[in-house]
Amino acid sequence: MTILLLAEIWLYIGLAVAIVFIGYGLDRVEENARGSYLFRPLLVPGVILLWPMVLSRWMTVEKTGYDEIRRDRPLRGGHFPVWIVLAFAIPAIFVGAMLIRQSPPLTGDGAVQLAAPDR
Amino acid sequence: MSVKYTPVQWTKSKIAYDLVVLAMVFTYILLFIRIAPQFMGDIKPADGDIVRARAFGTCAFLLLTVILCIGPLARLDRRFLPLLYNRRHIGVITFLVALSHAAFVLNWYFNFSPTPRLEALLTSNTSYTQVLGFPFEALGILALLALAVLAFTSHDFWLSFLTPRIWKALHYAIYPAYALVVGHVALGSLQSQSDPTFTIVTAASVALVCGLHVAASFKDRGNDPRRQSEKTDWLPVAKTAEFQEGKARIVRLDNGDRIAVFLHKGAFSAISNACAHQNGPLGEGKIIGDCITCPWHGFQYRLTDGCSPAPFTEKVPTYALRLEGETILVSTKRNPPGTYVEPVPLLQEGN
Image (cartoon, each protein chain N blue to C red):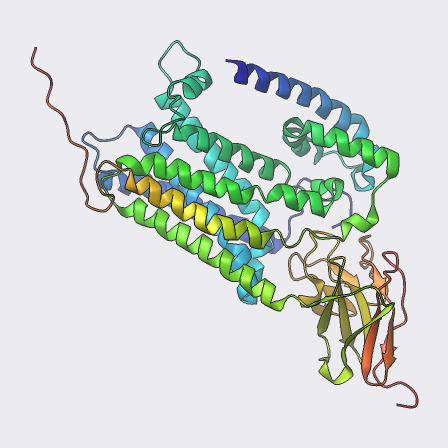
């Protein structure tokens, strides 16, 4: 199974990144993390899953520091278009799935136990 | 806030909130395991693992519905705001409940064969080109991955490290995750249910979540101030008589920035409308002491310099104001976060 092998490789790389980042990089990029150790294990699963993003962000902060301007530029305006699409898509998924059911969904028709075939 | 990080920043209210959520989850799962098997319409009584998988699965779906309703409810009616403060903890609980559901499914339906369980899960049904009999498990796996990303990045460190903008974009994954879960449920469990109860519950969840989000979106668009050009250095905000003591009026610039202009103790101050934590709308907050309190998570900033009171270190940009006749004007040039600006008194000499 290629997909499971790729997932395994992803997790091993993520674990290696997590060890280096949480052991060494965290103190360099995050002032509030210095001297705090109890919360660090909580970061491990996130770094393993998102290691490319962590590496990219780590390099950016090392090179240019935190961009204060970006911290108060909210992501706005995304909610409306997302929900205009989802408000049609989600009911369509539900109704479509109910239409292909072999018996109508609200009739209470249960599963039928088939008789054993004659030998 | 911006003190040394701890695993969880507990407060009395957060502990009470989490205890209530956990009590509801445990009660639901126990009641489901005891009562629901009588109504499932199975020919033979379902095995314990199957009932547990259904209990945790339905619980995760209901929790996801609750999480998705809290945001728009708080925007439509401020009385729901307290539910928003600790929503991230419900998110983590939802992920753990969904993970338990997946574990029960794996340990029953994909066990007892020489094929490894994960491999069996991914290869037992590969009919991706047909709707009837679609491998709905794949939709559940993707949704679980999305919930994992949200749960694993729920600590405040991630907000600070990624910046609120990237963090918020990442956490938009909750919306497609819900669509995937609806697909997972409707193409899976609901295809064979003889009892209509969970079909009705799913339909109600879809209607509620979609209806509330669309209603909140329209309300937000209706309330959003008109864009103002930045080509001039000073923009009119409103007549002084239009301000209410302790409240803000919000101006929106062409670049998308929003400025909250407050009247507090008879003087005007202007700061960015976006909280440094999760970009909550400061202009809709309450002034406590001389600080504006973000309505989303309670972060506070002094109106005069945009700084959080010690020991916290968050800062938001400030803006200069001036009074021209009876009109308050705001500078379109933002000051660096934390810059002190002298408040403009309502009644100036000579007025």
